[in-house]
Length: 99
Image 1: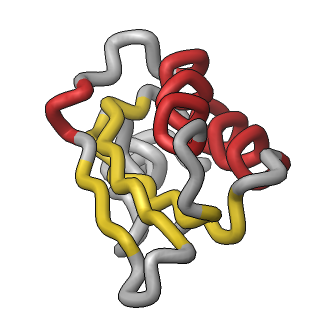
Image 2: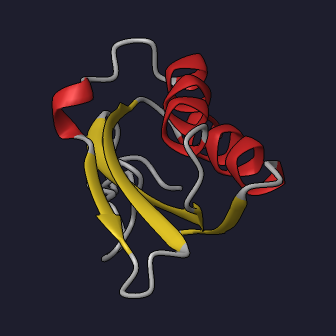
């Protein structure tokens, strides 16, 4: 780069749709409607987001009652944090889908 030319990195902006941290990030967890589902999912989320607020939890039961969905909102600090929580949640035997 020649002297006097602007540095192209100086005005770099996040690409549209890019995640900018820290940010509030909702995670929807769907799985089997069992008594242990909600507390186990919350424990996993707390492992990765210790400051997680229980007040953000939304619980919905499927029409037939076989499944439960939890939507939790965490204050995500990094992509690595999100990847770790998603990985642990998706590996849980009661979980069907994590969005």
